[in-house]
Image (cartoon, rainbow, N blue to C red):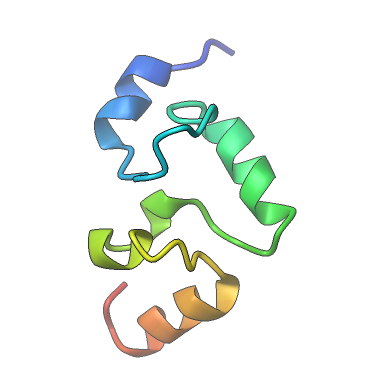
Length: 67
C-alpha cells in the first residue's frame, strides 16, 4: 500500500513540530498506542495542544459529548 503522506498532512492537527511521524499515520498510531495514547487527530485542537492524548482523556471528552 502506498503512503498518502501529503494528503494526511492536510488533515493532521499535531502541534508537536519536530515529530518525524507527521503524515505517516500508521507510524503515528503505532507510536501512540504503545503509550496508551491516541494520535492528536483524535482530539479537538484545544485538547491536542495540551499533549494529553491518553485513553482516559479521550473517554472524558466522549462522556462530555465533545467527541
